[in-house]
Length: 212
Image (tube, rainbow, N blue to C red; front, side, top):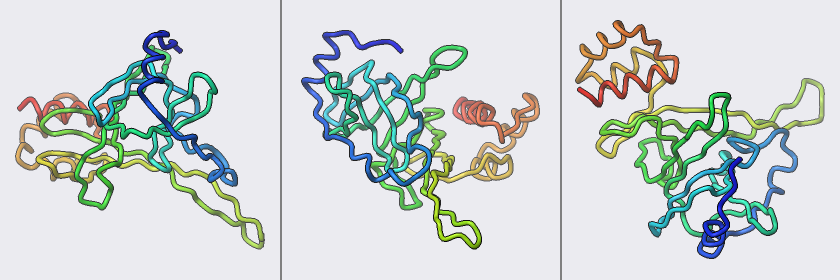
């Protein structure tokens, strides 16, 4: 993982304040609450307009909180100043694969505007993804012991004109939501042999919709 240049790191720690993360709330749950358990370098944009790069970040998707690592103590800290957008750069076999997250979206399912969504395609029509983990309790039959584990869930949304439409990775449901261009989209799906159960194919379709 690339390290943050000393001058950038010093400016970040001088400008950005944080509170120590209280991890005790997950001590009795098996697994971890993070999108990536390890620290991942990324970029953040704060509500005050300032941006910082090469920041060690970790995203708790249970509590929907972004954390950064203190360069002196190595402690995990929560941001005091609201983060409105951040990008993670996890390493893959083919190199770094950027993942953009943003909040401020108006949801019709009661999700807070402070909630972060991954922006899979950013256009007039956006494709958003929200991944979370819930704490699942299970007790085996005839056992008095209850175990708690993290169970991951993900949801997809279309966002246009300040409105979200929750969708599944399903051809019929997506085309119903995009009925104004259904003929062109049907042709694009057929000519490119798209399978909308695959996220990459769904992104291609939304990109094509934005080009029409």
